[in-house]
Length: 162
Figure (cartoon, rainbow, N blue to C red):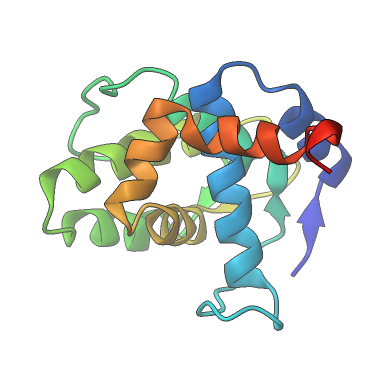
């Protein structure tokens, strides 16, 4: 898998503000690690184009910035530098749970908007698959919204703990 802008992604991860947004970035990062490494237990998924990692992190943080997310239109907006838009739209329409569909659609909107500045086309369907893997367990959504993931991560990085 080819990754674009890993340094910017790392910097964003280190500087993202707010427990909710930081929790969202940590959750999507763990989902990405779980589904991109040949050493992980998760189902491996691959993008059809290089992954611009800051877009993944920024789109996830923005999706959870305001909860509940503003209601997006039912169709994905035009524009952006994305490929596999139709597959992503079909994946969204096939989601049985309205809440998950709303959240995933809001995420897709963020990816499309952020992709306009990408150096190459981004695989929208891959982003969506990964996001859905991240929020499959509804407890993850609750832990992101409450900021619990960031708080626990901060506790684990406290040098006094060790």
